Length: 340
Image (tube, rainbow, N blue to C red; front, top):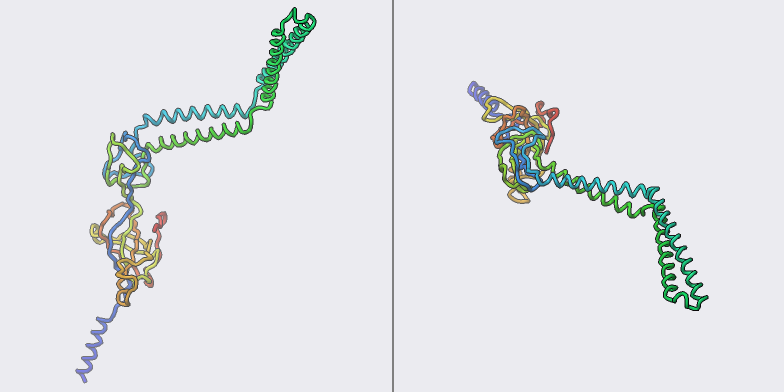
């Protein structure tokens, strides 16, 4: 009896020490990742200055390099002058004819009318003399010349009358619209040149660290040739993988901690920012029941690193409380961007 009791106690002790333990935390392994930028000029021109070296920290909006603008600045000045000239042309057309121009056209008409009246009188006198003398006092050629002078002066009267009408009416609406369209075209060209002048300075797109300085002063820049390779300091994340069986216990926004070998005994706060909707390392499209449990899904665990201590590619361990654990509360640092 004692032996049976002792055996029962031993079995109970073994079961207690070897009973299945409910997991309260997932441990995942991955590497630190961050965004990288290859920064190039929009223009194709010779580089005048490169202002940063490898390892330098750059604030968003800082000028990192400059192009030579010796040929671009005169083009901007010329385009500005063309715009100013066309603006004056549009204003002139909108205002129409000046009173002095109308008065001038009316005076020209009166002068032409006087010349026409004088030509008619001269023609009438010659015609009378020709008829009364039977062609002895005035030859037919003189009469014909006088008649031609009348026709010319009457045509001048018509021309000056039309000129006066046009001066009174002012420019056509189509002419004003054409001048305004030309002005918009010149303004667009000026805007483009000014943008090219602005693009002659290369600005940092965000707070970054210079990884590589790829071009030097004197070299030709182009949109396809980066001047710098930059590494963003925020956000940073650990790319890790979770199995299909644990996928249902991990949710976006779940709090996590991250440890790296370089800082032993220390954990960085983080949160789950992205869970891939697609399985990776899938052997084939239709899985057996055994293979389904081997599927993994990529996740991003964003990390708070205000001191910028984590480096690209660092091996990292992610400690993730499971969804049914009291510690698995959502966590999103204030002022930190939630990015996929």
